[in-house]
Image (cartoon, rainbow, N blue to C red; front, side, top):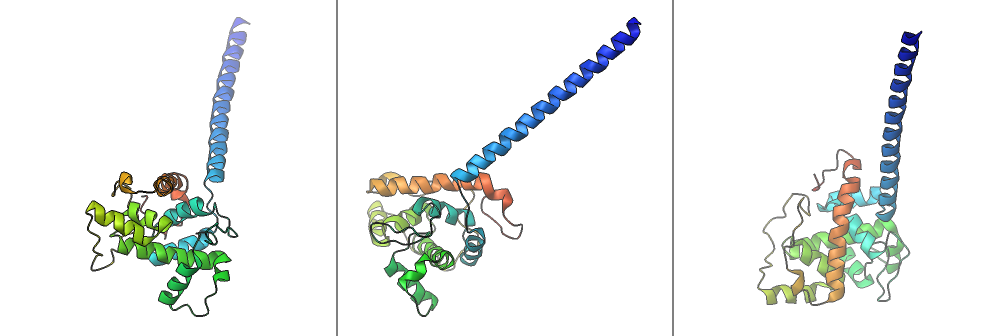
Length: 224
């Protein structure tokens, strides 16, 4: 009788341990799933197909474009700034017209910037152009996107940076896996622009952590 009771107790203990272990696993999965959902809400990745398409065309990490959009419009295609910048990537109408001319995009109208695909196409091409102009220095590229090419070029020249564009476009995806402060933030004279650069680079790190593994296998990323 004692043997039967002891065996039953062992079985109950084993079952209790298994249920407890299962509960821990479920709790961990629930926590991770909840955490992931919160992160994706904080760092949305809308218009993914359009971003990937134009990132691929311009040799950019799609998650870098997403980081720009998050800081510019928080993925609101109807956003219009006080200065008149429009859409997801907050493209100025004059910049949009200039890019459209470079692309041979006939019939450009500023209203087109409210279309997500057109906005991302123009904004991504402009980022790639800034990459060439500023020798691939990510801090300068992001700063120029925020406050204009001329001002940033002045800061770079004052700091003694050579901005000779490369003779050929580097085929490697950009920005690189390890993003460093390749131009001192202290040399950026506008506090707003310094904060903007910090915001974009911080968002890029988060986007890579959250979404890197979810990108299609045929989309290489510098986050790997």
